[in-house]
Amino acid sequence: MERTLAILKPDCVRKNLTGKVLQHIIDAGFKIVGMKMISLTPDTAGGFYDVHRERHFFTDLVVYMSSGPCIPLILEKENAIADLRTLMGATDPREAEEGTLRKLYAESKEQNIIHGSDSPESADKEISYFFSGREIVSLTR
Ligand code: CMP
Image 1 (cartoon, rainbow, N blue to C red):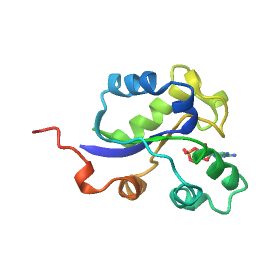
Image 2 (image 1 turned 120 degrees about the vertical axis):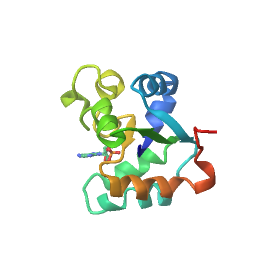
Image 3 (image 1 turned 60 degrees about the horizontal axis):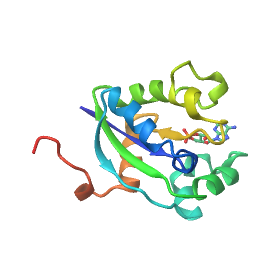
Image 4 (image 1 turned 180 degrees about the horizontal axis):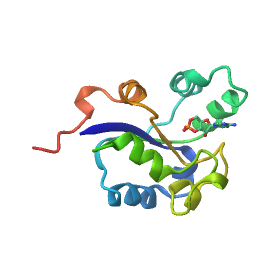
């Protein structure tokens, strides 16, 4: 079983889309094995997006990600990483497929409601950025 990290971003929480987006995720067959609501500081948001530090959008990204509470999730499923990215749709909602979360709910590529890990290496790193082992549940008990 594969795990991926998702973040319901501040615009998702602010626009009261949390319940709807979680239902899409559950209906697509993902099990939630970790979930918390937190407010990122500019430092923690910047650390998470460290690979984008040199990109022109980095400062705006950090301001946006620290603008209100967000919800990191650990999702489990066969092929979780690729399947979540399919469910999310393209970074820019104007380019996203019909029925994807970003097409349905996102405003722009800057405010695109959800993040999903892009590789097994990123998933491992991103999961441990937000969760300790004790915060991950076992669904077999
Ligand atoms: P995410 O999947 O969370 O990873 C990096 C984020 O940077 C991306 O979603 C977008 O929300 C954000 N971003 C802002 N501007 C851009 C841009 N011009 N190109 C790509 N990503 C951008």
